[in-house]
Length: 210
Image 1 (cartoon, one colour):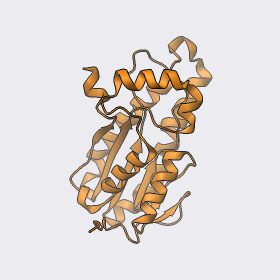
Image 2 (cartoon, rainbow, N blue to C red; image 1 turned 135 degrees about the vertical axis):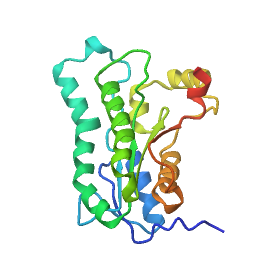
Image 3 (cartoon, helix red, strand yellow; image 1 turned 90 degrees about the vertical axis):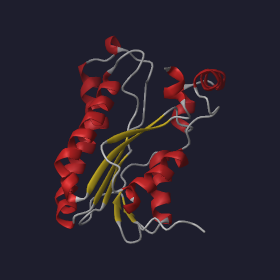
Image 4 (cartoon, helix red, strand yellow; image 1 turned 45 degrees about the horizontal axis):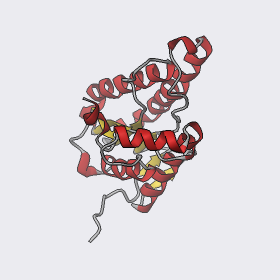
């Protein structure tokens, strides 16, 4: 028998249109949540997953001032502002779920995008201290390489196969549905004691690299 995740009637804000966002939106709707792409009254759940991972190969020297500002806005400042806008309603209702889907911030090299993900991770943890007493949880999901159009546009099939074989014990990329399934759990009342965490969804890649 399928589990009832008790999300019926919960109002979820899930902005963006990438494949991960679409999978999360579909999963929440399947559990009865009322999903919107923009703020509309009080919000119970907000998912920050709209920022695609764009150029993991660039380095610090490749990142000029404009790219630093753009990546901080795209990956951190934009989601932070949107979350702050809906927090008062969550505090008033005594319930809130914030899930941030972030990229790696522990790379072999460093660039503006990784810095922005690091800021998002630190903010996710620190905000927990401020709002946890109001029944609000904040968690970040950190996937490995995602099987989506954006990834396949940046990698050749041969390079992807080599990367997966060498670095991901599960032998495949992360799918948008892998992320969506965990998101549903984190948004449910069953995850009320899970907060301030960064959860890898990486097929064992992080452990394998140690």
